[in-house]
Length: 137
Image 1 (cartoon, one colour):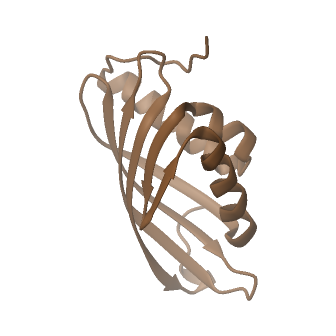
Image 2: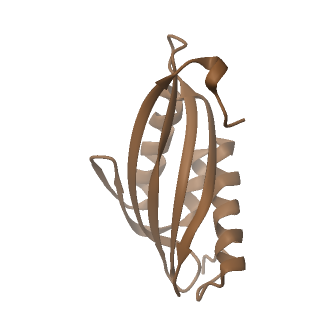
C-alpha cells in the first residue's frame, strides 16, 4: 500500500512538514516523483483546468515544466484541519522568449488516511515581472 507521511490527522507541525515536502518535490520538476504524492484517482482544479487521476497529473506536470523554464516555488502554511491543509504559494518561471512571470495564489488540499493527496484546488494568478524583480530562488 502506498503511503506518504506525515499522515492525518495533522498538527500544525505535521502540516508544515507536508507543505515543505510538497515544495521540495515540486522544485525538482520531476513529474514521476511529484505525481506519487497523489492518489490514483486524485481530483484537481488548476486554474480553469480539471485534472483527474495520477496519470493525468503526471502528463500535466510534464507539459507544465516544458513551458515554465527556470521554475522555482515557495509554499507557505495558511491553515489546516484533520485531513486538510491550505497553503499560499508563489512561483517564478520564464518562457522560451526569456520573459519572467510570478504566479501566486492559494491551494486547498485534502488527504486520504495514507497521506496521499486526493483533492487539490488551486487558484492561481500570473504577473509579468522583470528578472531583476525575482524573489523566489
